[in-house]
Length: 326
Image (cartoon, rainbow, N blue to C red):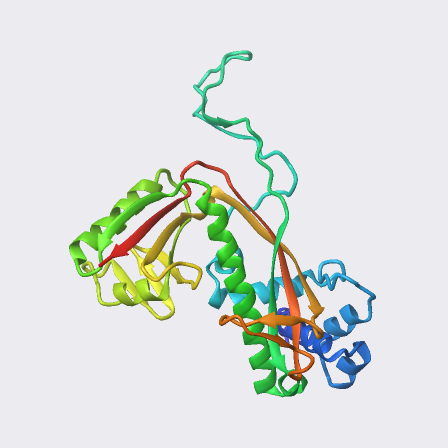
């Protein structure tokens, strides 16, 4: 077997281990178990290492498990537009807590002499900073589900974690982008020509220069509406997203039913830096109808997952919204 083949197998093994780490840590936290339990049950060594460290915050970054956070983001990208854009690096990566002063130079003239004035196309002097913020969610399951370490049990818990964190991250992303004064368009839901025209107008409003990364984000209801529209093959949307005018489209529950958004991701600095997992056994939760229940009395256990990230628009126009009307 070649050295490259062995290296590929080792890398794949580490990737599988990283992908399983967060679920095992969440299960151990929910059950009040430690590193010895995870090791005895055959859990990944990275999860054992994290749990062996006394971390009151549950921070995976502090425990040196940054690759596990990356693996979690990649898996959660299926249920989160924000995490999908982070995973595929559509956003612009930038250092945290550093003034993001930048400029774009025009082509320098041939034969330019030293000391001659240099013209720039743009210059950002405000120095906006990418600052860490966090969004938390609680994932609740009955004690029997937390204790299942077989394949279905692992898949169930991982799915709960990914969906909860992804939905919370999307909601926070749109809260932040709402402050940038999005460009607004409307179209009648039953008028395909008007809807296609509104989508084109949104693209024209944001596609301003070469090298941009644009991404559509749709509510499930809006995606259902677009699924019946082709626009000569330029629109292809289904339950798993798709493309609109060759631009990738993702679904999210963070938008209202008739909402669609086009995001200039490359004009936004964003990154995820940490994920913390903590137990919430004695919590009391309020149901949508207002009823309050005690997790302990109901034989339920929750874990609090806190995603730490940064998101900072670097331009005035970074989002256009298309609203469907009846």
